[in-house]
Image (spheres, rainbow, N blue to C red):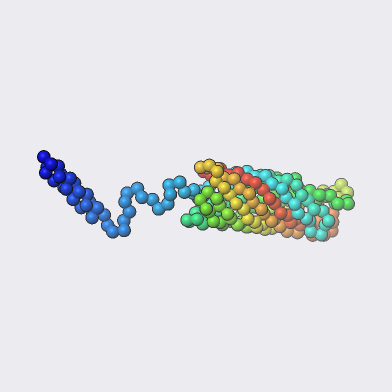
Length: 205
């Protein structure tokens, strides 16, 4: 009886060896993956909100508008290994304003359309960003209000952290330059340059 059992075991072993020999050299066994199953993916669309603080100055005028700003952002990421790149747009309401002598300048709203590129360490992304900026610069003097919508540019850096499967939080700094346009109330070209620090949350679809 023991000889029959030994023969059966030998037959099973030879069959397993033959199957293993049939697997081409260099091929992977079934269900093997190239990265850990829990690796964080940054690819795809997202939508979120933010709040922050802006401070800056007006060209050819002593006012220095500052105040809180908040709004919404959305974008799309592509990922190649640890490298993440994409596009993002945002629209912000701003309370930044300042008064000096007869002049008061404010920035009621602004927005940006930017590229983003960065390096991900699993669920942490460090990135740089830059692109187009646009917004309103509003001036008032002696009861006369004048408003211009100016275009310009923006650049900045940030870090984003994935704290759940579909949720991320970020901190970001942007420098925004809304180019000059001539204001009748000052007789000068006036533009608004400001820094912005903001916190945001995104939901990834």
